[in-house]
Image 1 (tube, chains in turn blue, orange):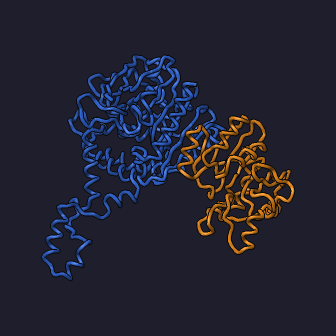
Image 2 (cartoon, helix red, strand yellow):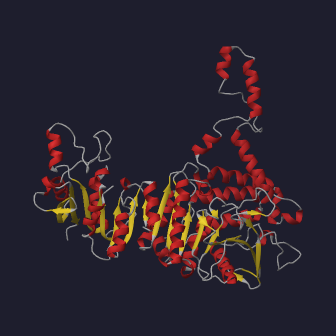
Image 3 (cartoon, each protein chain N blue to C red):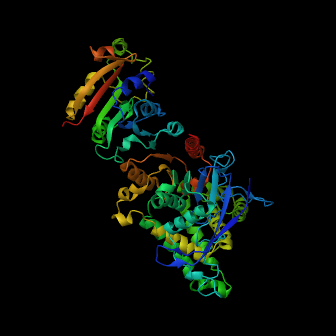
Length: 398
Length: 195
């Protein structure tokens, strides 16, 4: 399936939750499949922290350019683009095409927004997404779907536009972040903000990129997206090959008894700054890769949106009261080893929906991969989502 | 787990349009039947992945968790009927679940294999644990970790101060009201909190 990135410009101001507004803005998006004559088969996919509107398919002539949820969405896949018209949209403040901190600030046209880009919330994103649907002539979504922060947007859709959503699929998400989760975000933000190359968020005009901060932010993120078990299985205490070879040489030159002592333990370099363990190498690689393409201000904005999301807040913390507005049907999915968005948090959403007698199914997948599981191919997970979308499709035909 | 004749016999105890919670709902057949024939709504609870999938495929709401964790997800009296069909005998906390069933539901309907059914008694009399169509497992690999009789549940209900609104046996899809403890392979109770 070939994907084509599109862009929609919105000339009218969008008022944000903060009271600030974006005078005009653009949203990058992609669509897959065909909108039916009734315009009833649209499925909106909301992205998480570092993803984009490129949800599925590949770009013409570009190998390895699969969308971030290509295993889930496409012809014959659980979210079947032969039946559904699927929309991926890049959120405001992101760095993949939609209006964000690296774009020109209309209030001072010689300058890009940088740190002056207004703080955007999940609710603001949903409002912008709704305007995109308006522009496309789509009144009602067959389903809105997302994982993690994307799941928060899906949940928010059901509260902000209950009449425009028939189904919500909320995967590995939460009704708000716990203190521990906010803490992780804060460490990542401090890493970026204290990088001397950050220049108070106006690094573009200094021709610098706060890569050190971005790398550390990404490293922390990666630790929290995996489970202890998977990390141990993948990396354990393994040393990098170069180091190990040296160890083996050393071991071979020793007498048998002493070799026995060192085998398995390996030889350390006795350095404090070299990359010795495989896990270090992996995290540095992930950090380097991320720092090449991700925008520092976007990282700050998106983690802040995560921190702020809390639909129960205006109901004295009562999630059941907050979710009263949601009238659509829900599928919730969580993963047992996900400690960043744990099953407990999905159960809170389930309970609030049960309290309101809403249609909800909840699958708790016993997968080993931690939070990352929502992007991976677990047959139980894929099977449940497929079955759910088959029922959505049946409903459309009825 | 439970066969169709038991499900259909029990479905008749569920009033039209009830809000139903089916604990250990299996593949969701019972709830689908209640939705279709009696206009009921509600949820199933299951732990097995394959059953959760089957429920979603049928369009039955299902919540995946282990019943041993209790029913904290559900509010007091939030259902007209809570079903426990061939579930109680699998639970370590069977007594707690019995109380939880009538806390969450205005009525709890419990069905489980009656160990005092005469062929079972005969087998034990001969010195062997029964292996029958209703109790198809060998003693060493049975998931039925709570082995009780129709009469035992009456005693347990009384011990917990629960009101027995009805109780009878089921055999070959038919209600057994005369000597059910001897003549029925399945025991059925309709329980509630005392008014």
